[in-house]
Length: 110
Image 1: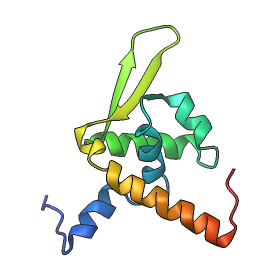
Image 2 (image 1 turned 180 degrees about the vertical axis):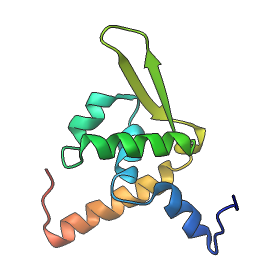
Image 3 (image 1 turned 60 degrees about the horizontal axis):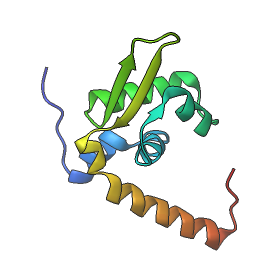
């Protein structure tokens, strides 16, 4: 299978963290380790199927680490990898831009 071909560095970044939910997941995880249920509750507008899919893709791309504990009931924790942490300045910039946009337009959150 041929390697995917990119023509711009932004394509690489968007391929890894693009979409509606990946940046939101990463933003939550930059605040610290989260259990699956915590992420689910903090993102009520996404389906369980979508959240699982996005987490798996982020894990496969090396941005998120999934740690499963052999407990009853089972526990799964998610946190950022070193590569995931390298995105924090980008996520912070997006957060600040969104905050300013919210203020400018009068949008309400939650």
